[in-house]
Amino acid sequence: MYPKLSNRKTANGDIIYTYVCKMKERSKKDICSSRNANGNTLDTAVIEQVKMLADSDLSFITQLEKSRQFYTSNREIYENNFVELQQELAENEKKISSLVDSMITVGESAAKTHIAKSIEELDATNKSIRSRIAELEELTSAHSLDGLEFDLLRQLLAVFKNSIDDMTIEQKRAAIRTVVRKIVWDGVNAHIVLLVQQTTK
Image (cartoon, rainbow, N blue to C red):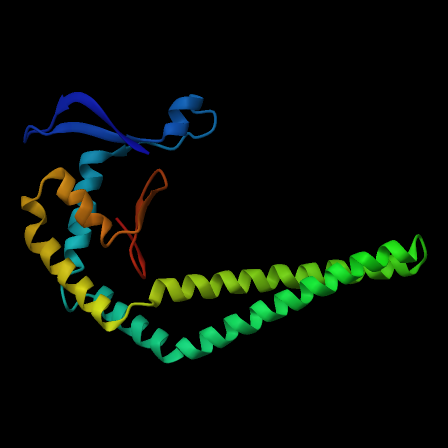
């Protein structure tokens, strides 16, 4: 989505704008018909939501610390599981390759059906393994904050809370990117995806 300016202004003199889906405009609503988002309202809501994260008693900080501790204590388990899954995936790929080669030698015999079934089963297993590997990668990347990074994040949130209102547009954008992963507009609500949790505004 991108901000589309209008010729109108708010009571404070700010230009009124909306966030519009590019695909919606290009396809004339054939591909996307999602409602536009009020840019002025949404930006203000996002800023206020992030400012709240700096409060030490807010669940975000508590959850972030618990998440970091949980990952740190389970790091070895994650890494071992990851290695085991990678090895199992590689072994299954070798088996599939071998079975494919054997299909050429058996021709059209009854054994070909059994070999094909074995290949399908191994392929299904590999899909499950890849899914689990992706989960582990996401888990580790989302929670791998060390002590220094955690302290830095808390400092950034404090600066954000105390200084955001005095920043320029460019500075606000840069500040928001340090704590907000993405914002998803579903046509009704904006889902603010942070480092370890998702909130709705």
